[in-house]
Length: 220
Image 1 (cartoon, rainbow, N blue to C red):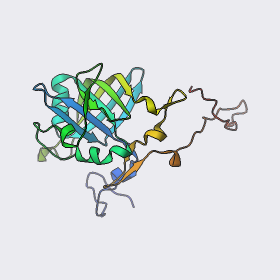
Image 2: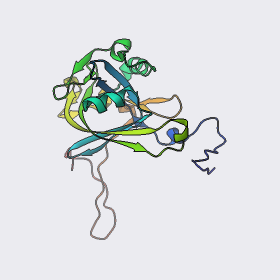
Image 3: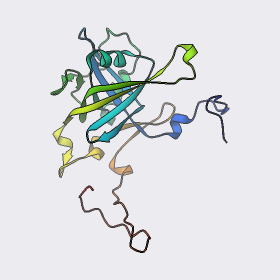
Image 4: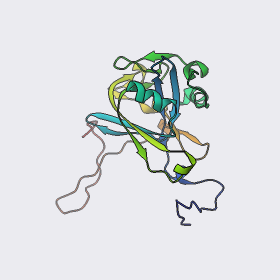
């Protein structure tokens, strides 16, 4: 099949776009309003986009509490949602007013960052402390319906890692088992059963790819 995404004439029960662009990491965004109200919400339009310096982004449909708080205070956090925290993460996704503390609602403990004043999930395997850089208002085909897409960019100024997930000097993602978002209402988990290590190839003098060697533990 081949269809026009503006007309969205795929003739399927649901738009397959998010099922195709998968898996996606979940950005569990923590923020605090100027009035001191905590907010926690998961976003599947999330990713790291640079590492010198570290930058992340997430996208929100409409200006939700997370976006309002971040633009008010200039700070936010990203907690890593893991398999054991799924029910808590899912609980924090419920639509609620700005006066509702989703940390409390989902049975989680907030922890204030060392580098920002926004809270992150203390039970998380890792968390990123971020300073707001820019918000980009994306063009939207449904603008006449009052909706929009807003991309929040943030510089990561501090990182928290639960020490039990550091093994041989590396963050052990397979042990942490972070959640990923698929299409529809589907999720996945990153674990040792579905990950592998492979070195990058090199180009030989003959213009052909050399056989890939085992990784020597040095990230280049």
